Image (cartoon, rainbow, N blue to C red; front, side):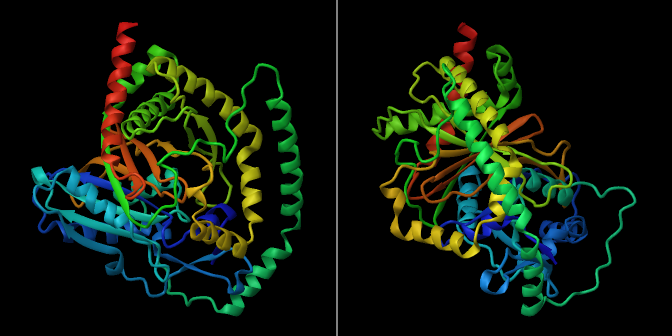
Length: 461
């Protein structure tokens, strides 16, 4: 029995009937190198063999009575692979639009908490004899980096010398056992409370001092982003779009403009959103603000989610695309300095103090009152850039050709753009609330246009 960290538990608390907190990926596979019989059965066999390399896939969530403490992960004594492995077939022509529609339907359904929190949907009927799998896992079990690691362990070759781990079945813990474990943990929380309070006061003072420096423009504050059609109360319906670009093209722009790869990605998103909103007749005079997650992984730090984040202005009020990149680069540098001052430990300590009942109640109250139909959002969009698997992956004898990442949206922020690198390509997965961003496919197309515009302007310069 393992206790969830505060950050991991937060992704359980904020889940509502319209906000589903799972990560996912749509993986497209080339035809197998050699015939291996029915592909679904080949995938099932490969999955059975790979499960022992990913123990979290056999564990389910249990709540502590009266929500005295964060939930626990426990081994599922009734684990059934057939509950998690599903089968689907695309309607003709089986192209990217049909695949995105199916993935959107899968993203719009919550995971069943009475079982381990993951699913794999095996998809057949793609054009060019391709196949796909849509893999979904709860955010409490994985952040972006962890999700890539899980995928690599699940689909990668078995490490030399590794053998399946023999695990005797365990009974679910009783309510009294959970309460006793929670009380023992709470008894040792006093130092965490004091550390969190002290560190919060120190961080607030340091940020105030930095933001008062002459000539220094501070990063945006939460809940000061402009209101747009992207930012409203969401429904449970999802609409997805996929696109990809050559990593070489992005790196060439990075070198030519002397910025980072992430700056170029953010500039692509800024250009795409600027054009999308203009097409809807929205004149947004203030720059949009992106939440950019930052990995904070460190050996020994507990929890599947080891992240902090920074708020970056996207300079969508700047007409010239090259100047926009440079403005974004400056904003990213300032935001990263602030993120370093805050530190992931401060965020983790504060998350440990979140009262489960308060966190759950506040999230549902915000949704029920439709607060973000009137108030300014905390930020306008989430843009996450994750390093993909370092080597080629395979499943059921088929080489993995593409990975389109998918991440959650929430009330007030109806669009998430996540990017994963793999085999010399950057794969973009756009997840949107269907009612809030109905034409998310346009945004995906505008991403490619924004890259082309930057390339042309850079060549002219």
